[in-house]
Length: 302
Image (spheres, rainbow, N blue to C red):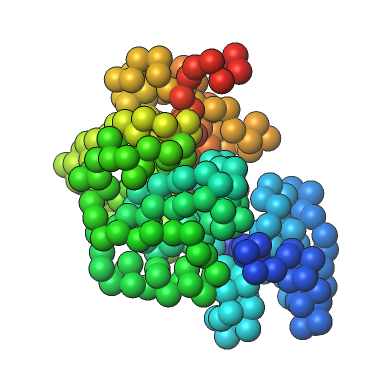
């Protein structure tokens, strides 16, 4: 039996509008607003022209599966962003204060970048890197449409960016969403034969460890969100564990969203600080997020 289709998640772009105004807009379109969801069950029973405010994320509206927004004027004008709930978690958890300098290491197609910009209220700087010219061009258009101003896009491999460059001396937050197997994407889930080979997984994991280690070398870094849309432990808990061990006691995991039901696999002490997401348990794409924080005087004791 096919899994139930996921709800449609709509992130309100707070650079351009407010949640209340978007709610009013949809009410005028004949939708009835049910207020804030009490839990995941409520999200799964949405149908017809009804919508909710998400239970975890303050700027996320939830609509029935298959609701089509592509011709919606709020979408075409950048007032709303169509973004799966799981993909909203990294920026939400990273939560840089307005004015911060942030790196988005593997940025295209840019939904997470625009989310960071909204959290920053367009104050501060975002340095965004990606290798794909076409995706960067699309991303530039999307960010302009979303009203993002304080960003700098570079077609560059993040691994070649020098952490010692004075340009990045104030970077305190990094969003790292590296290439992964994509095994959590619901569109790809049903086909078992699409599972990546052991070799491919090992190659991806080696790359992910390298890029995470590299990111932790930025001298002013306080917090980093590491995320994948993979279900594989090799790309998730194993990567985080290996890099934390290599770092000694320089960084630690933050126990994020304690109410979130789906945690990291208990493969090492503290792995439950990480979040996992899945269609069955959280009504989202399959996803993994870990929030790393520099240990030190400023960090409260666990």
